[in-house]
Image (spheres, rainbow, N blue to C red):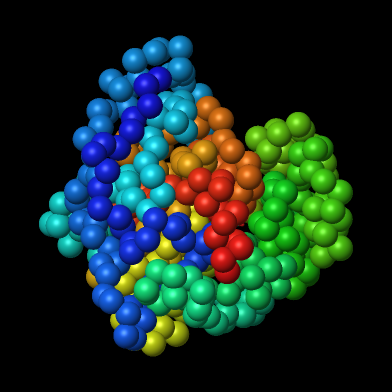
Length: 375
Ligand SMILES: Cc1ncc(COP(=O)(O)O)c(C=O)c1O
């Protein structure tokens, strides 16, 4: 497949080419006394570059094959990460929406999302985390950059919010039969903690290649760890089958309305805690649960705030799906940022992102390492 490069380059999205860090963070007004620089220049409906539709653009048929996605029987086009690349600091994968479409964002959906986020159960277990000014980054960029400190949650991750919200809403009889999930990361820990608090049994399946330190940490939280399959997909297939056999409810890492709305409480907190104007929220994207939840809240109460996804250049499944207007499957995914190394984004998360997200920034592995140092 030919690489689809963005040319000519667009003006920088933010006042620097440095990418945002891999935690939800927010940008507010420029630091006092510093020159004002435009924060976001993207428009809602404009593509960053002309690109041909998916299959028409794939000159080499050997690189386009159809695969069955994990969550449905619909075959998905397989594409390579290199087919959509643009430099750090540029906005791409801007959904092709007109202002009228934007204004018409399904009001019933919107109200139901707001209600579900406002009434979500996450605070039985999760904390309201602070927004912290990232002083070095703010200095360097000449804008105020705020970090949403989800690393202060139990098990150091926001994933607990969605997992707990879904599990707490299960009918008692279903909860008594237990839950099951597949994850080698933060979702596994979230499910284990939620199960402990709700007093239900949780089986967590992980690929047999999972490092001991990871599965031990889930075991310590009370989850029953089962190592199954060589890959994440194999572990997930095992979990779904075992869930059916034992009557356990499968808790997906991102593609479920209750999981998404649980993550949406982060958007609610950002809006509530932010002092002063808020221009944009940058959100790391894996399967899309976090960004879809944040967008579902923020676009309803502050539609002027840009919601921008951040993906590793070699794990750009959401950027490619938005670009093509349909979900795609990556033929390969880079695992450096393992929490967001996802080949296929969720069905429901994609539907919401198509309606609500303003575009995606891609970051290189080097840029991720460098930004960790700056923080
Ligand atoms: C630290 C971190 N950031 C972002 C994400 C992406 O979340 P989602 O899959 O909901 O897009 C994950 C997923 O596990 C994560 O662990």
